[in-house]
Image 1 (tube, helix red, strand yellow):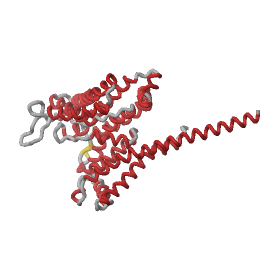
Image 2 (cartoon, helix red, strand yellow):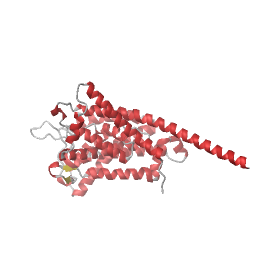
Image 3 (cartoon, one colour):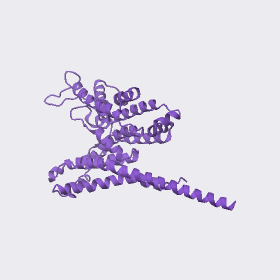
Length: 371
């Protein structure tokens, strides 16, 4: 029977719990300082989450955040900060939407083509940062931030009617054209609540794949080893540069999939109304979930709840920006609490080593005495 390390389990759970408790307390204090009832907005959000349509929205948003956070987590496990997930997600969604609207194939092939194009586009865009890092030593943080800015301009140019965009009659919106029904991913009809995106379940399956690859394969071991110490990994025969590039490509491919739930399940086109900022939220989701697929799932569910359950707070006289304050506080709380927990864990580990050495010394002395 496998022995459970209680200290490791407690330390692993302490970070997220401390972050959530701290963010809740700070949010209450901010609301109270603003002259607002600090408890009522939270009660209203919980009440809103009881409606079936809001529940469907939360589940769908969870799938989007989950995919994007997995993309971020792959980079984190390699000690890479892929801050460009948002750009990779938006560019992949647009290019795959263009291809999907331009062709008509039998259902499964049409969907597969759109998905592969999204993955390839995201991997290509993140691969640029990977190549710059492995060949020129450019920080992935700097390169992915710049690529995000390029994505914004590139998407704005591509969607112009004179290029690839389509402007529906009587509308100011710009789209990439409608994907034929053969390219729609079937979902689960929840009646009056709406439809759960079918790709949400693909996202959950990819979480299982992520866990298996990271924890049960040689590739996952090499990836984690390179993230822990690039020089040590090289000394043991791991090609660190190859692992960095591979991790960036996989991260970008997952980022490209982040737009698939809404593209294949609801909008069936890329437009100016397509969600933005998903990649930046995913960074916090991955951090709060400690890069573990189960932790990321609960973290994604929390942020989806904050997004969707706050939709009518303004009707009750509370600004919807309350949720943005909460999310911002969570980011700060995550950074601070994880550092505190890390320091405690280090001290605890040093203490245990000291106790074991002392115990070993005592045993040795007893043997010497007996001899």
